[in-house]
Length: 183
Ligand code: HEC
Image 1 (cartoon, rainbow, N blue to C red):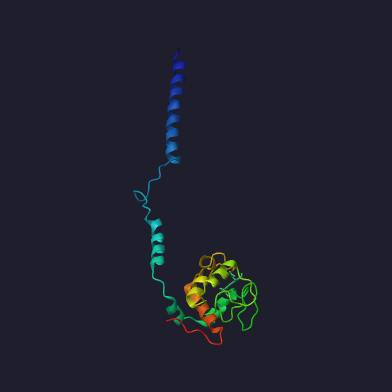
Image 2 (image 1 turned 60 degrees about the horizontal axis):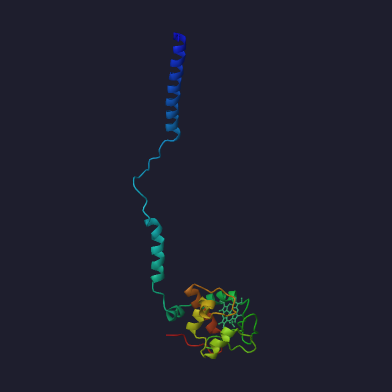
């Protein structure tokens, strides 16, 4: 082996060494480790917070219906009733539509609109007796299918208790002799 060949070998080794070092430096640049700004783990507290809030809201005591009715606004209720008017008439002597005529509904016997084809569920409830007082109307309008499973009333329900009270105040006016407000 002459010195020229040794030089070639040494050159090749040196070149390889430089190349490997270069790769290492490049790797550091590309794959620089991301250090967390704050050391430690994220605690799941942030996720739990809204749940706790919701539980609190659910646990908050609901205002009793008589209290809501005492400050209810029949005018606002008349506006709410537009959602019912597609299926119900509200005027005296009004006709049955998709749903039974509702004039005088407060304190009226259940399923008692003449000539209306009530569902079996409605007829069963009526057979047990009972009338539509404020409390039962409130429960029915809140969740028709929950209060009366099998009802043919295709309405999802009005969930806001204050708006329901306004609506009940309006329904109460649909009478020659409005029912007394519950105490
Ligand atoms: C998509 C049509 C539809 C809408 C909207 C609707 N209803 Fe009804 N409603 C019906 C039908 C149908 C019945 C009969 C239910 C049965 O026989 O099970 C009914 C029954 C009722 C009854 C019982 C009447 C009785 O004589 O026993 C009340 C009270 C009532 N609806 C109130 C309301 C109010 C208040 C609203 C608006 C917030 C409303 N409904 C919206 C279709 C509707």
